[in-house]
Image (cartoon, rainbow, N blue to C red; front, side, top):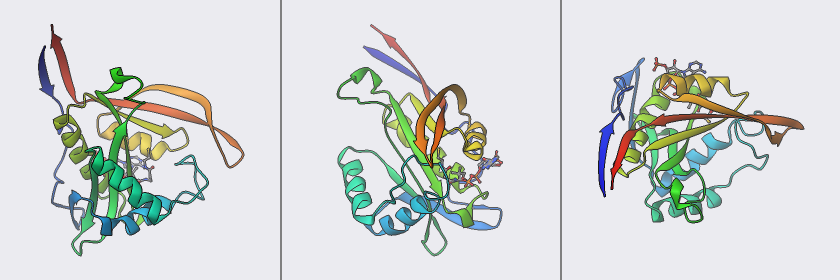
Length: 198
Ligand SMILES: CC(C)(COP(=O)(O)OP(=O)(O)OC[C@H]1O[C@@H](n2cnc3c(N)ncnc32)[C@H](O)[C@@H]1OP(=O)(O)O)[C@@H](O)C(=O)NCCC(=O)NCCS
């Protein structure tokens, strides 16, 4: 079987990777155990007041540490953005889109999440995180990255559009939080056109 890959990762990037944008120095690196505390804080910051994440339970550092170890075990990247003092200001990761063990046909597709500290938003941090994640994903053989976004989270939809994701569907009232039915917007970006020659 011959695979041919035509890369598109990085195509929508701008000056970011270890850079200064809008007056802020930051860089992207792999997360360590020591980062889990601030990552959890960023994750929890909007959880109680918004429907960005469909749970009402705050995450704990212990749970997130176990999750981070499981990601490492599965060879899945967890990236953080850090400021000039190495303070965590955002993080991103990806995992299976659906159950790859049960349905291996989904193994070239992944779903990501990205969270930026509100104080650092609008400065290119989210873009830098996701662009680096997409480079890692493509190198790992992922062909399509999915963003599954709460329908009320218009900011995230606009953010993903700027990164080259396109809306491919909307599932109506599939979530429930704060006594409200929630819609799910599905966006995708194809990273590499994979042709299979049998
Ligand atoms: C969505 C989120 C990750 C964006 O991160 P960010 O660091 O603020 O975004 P950036 O500064 O890197 O913006 C990248 C691009 O998206 C655009 N963008 C970002 N947020 C936007 C918004 N709310 N509305 C419109 N455009 C937006 C920027 O203008 C920028 O465009 P450009 O690079 O082409 O000039 C961040 O706001 C966040 O963590 N939100 C809360 C958690 C969340 O919603 N996560 C996603 C769950 S699906």
